Image (cartoon, rainbow, N blue to C red; front, side):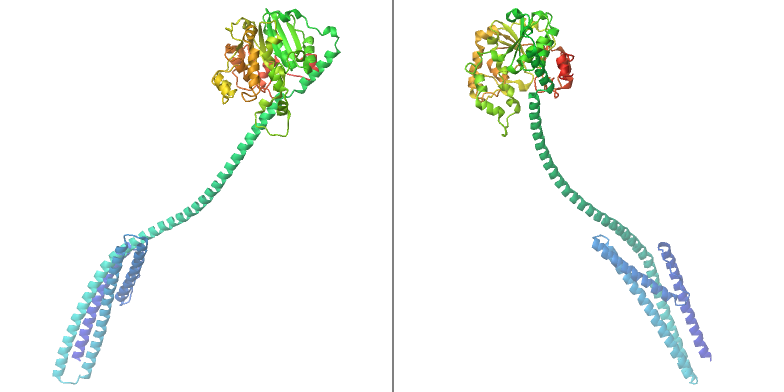
Length: 598
């Protein structure tokens, strides 16, 4: 029994040593877990069983395997992203797998040793019980062998336990370091993943935006093309509207307002109803007196002629020294005479003539009259149904009227006069004009205000300088001058035979030297024969320019409504109409009967 007891005692000591080694392992593992729990969130529960070392080691192996898998996944993702941390992740994964293998080997060795130890103990016990009655020598040998075997097993167990503890310590140290790096890597990968996810979302949004922009760009391109087409169409419409407006303005300028038409009819009817004894003007002796101030006025507009005469006499210092010579056509002759018979001029003299009475003015004498009576000119002005590109201004039928060309026949009309002041019927006199007869014209025939300040009033704007005749005889940059208020020296006119000069140029002109109108003909006729007057004598532009300087208007001796915007028309510039209306007596009976108001 003593041998058995000693054997049992040795087994108990062996067991205690194993338990002590196990406790030491638990202390080491607990310390390892405390270090891990300080750096990682998951906390594992401690096992209360005596095989806690195997469970802990197995759990650590599982965790290291998972970490290795995570590291492999991270490494793959990093390699896929092209990150420079892929090599480090692979190295850490290999380290984790090496630790896993080492721990697994230690556990296998421990299990194997314990199995062998239990098998040895069983064999020793059976051998002792089976041979309890043997000899003492055999007992002594068995006891010695048992002791040697137990000691050998104990040393092997201690060595293996020590190796296990060392491996555990190494794995614990490695495990304490490796999960921290893994966590950092995972966090870094999570941040990168979130960043990549945000970037991916932004890229998708950017792609959608680019698609929208591309669509908008395509729409904008189409819109630009549509706008260009609309602009082109609008410009064409604008040009068409301008042409139509210009045409309508010409029509309006040529038309006679209903009130003025009524006035002509009313005056004509009154004239032929009046006793013949009351149809004579006073002061007929003044008509040929060269010492008086004579005015030439050619018009078919009764009210316009009345304003010229009234405004001149209103500002004349000596009205009795002023004589007015009015020439009109057959249709307005009676009305013109009746107006001035019904509205006498005081001591001033007036003469109203009918152009039909100038029997010397015929087509055999006047080239322009011959041209105006030609079938070509009649077709040009009155034919319809054909599109003409010429400015309608130059197709104004007033150019067919010989009244417009009477200004070139002043010596023939006034054979006994030396000087005559020519006034258009769209002018208003604001100063006494008697000083004009005192101006020395220096041998020139025509005294006029030049229009050099306006570039469009130079010779090249009126004459065709592509024609060699014009180019040879005139300067394209020469200053033009204004018709409408001109003082003519009839004595010089006769000396220089200006009428014949005019006829010569009219014969040469077949509408290739200049277009119709009196100003181009006057420019060539009075070339180098015009004396420039001071600009304050004659202010132009009130019939087309709404921006004429107010000071220039007030200081001008004569203001001129040249253009289509005549003051007696509705299309006239309203702010200029007052200068003209001041010399119209709207209380006159004929004006009230025809409803002519300011």
